[in-house]
View (cartoon, rainbow over the protein chains, first blue to last red):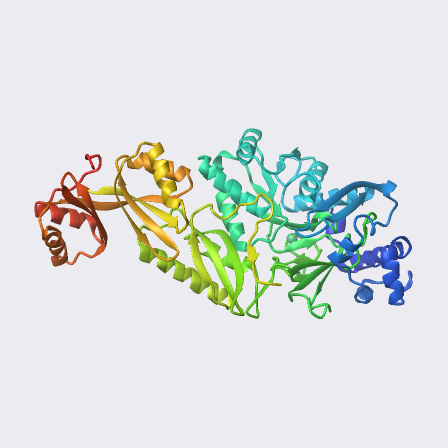
Length: 432
Length: 140
Ligand SMILES: [Zn+2]
């Protein structure tokens, strides 16, 4: 199902023409309305009318998260505050939150891309959409809410928390679609098991999961435990919120809504574009945003991109599964390590739960990686040597995937902190 | 013929063992025998209790990794050499012992044993005249 066939299946030539026009208008808006960008343009000798095509993107300055902090809270807004109708913010783990300001038209754009996302997932007005993303400053809850409302689905604004009650509501109200973080989906599945609820008692058929990176194996696990098709939605507050890109039912990469958000993949070191198919840092330019347009915003997310037409008929570029974030990337003994790699190893093994914690420390100038892994209740053995064999197996699998050795410590079930939002996977004790 | 043992995964953290005994005492469960096998990082607590199902449910509810394991329990008359003799019978038919622990039982000793073939172990011991402990039997 395609919500906006005209936009989503546009020929690339026509799309680029549209992007060129929109980029040109955006650069001009930035030049005249945002002092931060005007200063950057002037430093590089760029005039408001110099940029006429997306090919020239590479000459334009990049924007980083620190720029948003430096201009906190409203310094990057391109319209007077009277035109801003909504504010959102994402909680920074350190320092100030990241703010997003929306005009009325921005909210319409946002609902439009979420509507497209839901249709891509095969969700329509007959569905009951249970939104367990947090409502509030976080964009997840209201973002999904507006889009689901736009397509005419029945929306349940459940928000996060109170998991047993949520299951009750899902059961009684016949929720067919679940929208939340993938880790909360697993937490729901766990709770269902705890209270003796079988997934067949629910009508769930689709899951719209995002706000944190997750692996193929985690998808399989969620699908199997909740009896639904799990699809990946991507977005960030700085750009608009969820709905920047979305997987279609073919689960073959996330379609970027390129008529609103221009994607680029850059080598994180050289900051030069990499060819299609190669992994790099995802960078977005919001060509239609009015409230807070961002130019070449570095997302810190690592992925690769293709512009090959998808079987679903959409022509929009697709992002491949996210590899993690440049921030999540740990450098241990000189090797790049992503928590998501550990997760895939654990999910491939039937004996362990995908709940883990990486603890990195430095002892005598040497980086030490310890991984806490929860034992699976059903696999746990009464024999020491079997548990030791399991530890060795995990260790060997981790080492072959990460390329470095790690100490594996089995811990009791449910002792690693569960989070209803983003899961905490790493404790880095090394002095910075 | 076989006894049900509770096997429980314990992290080597202070207070975990006390927590297990607290859960059991709250349910008025009597522990007849227990042993701990431990490594540097974790331990396995093995227990024979008087109400296995109640204990299993209570511990599960408290989030412990626990399950039941079939083991053989038998009485060793209180004379020197009796355990040796029993083990020799098993050895003679090539039964391998995974683990064994003993406890006092009505003035005699009793042993819990897990082997690579529990059923054969039980029949063999029975044939040699050992009294096998049954579930529900007064175990203290
Ligand atoms: Zn597609």
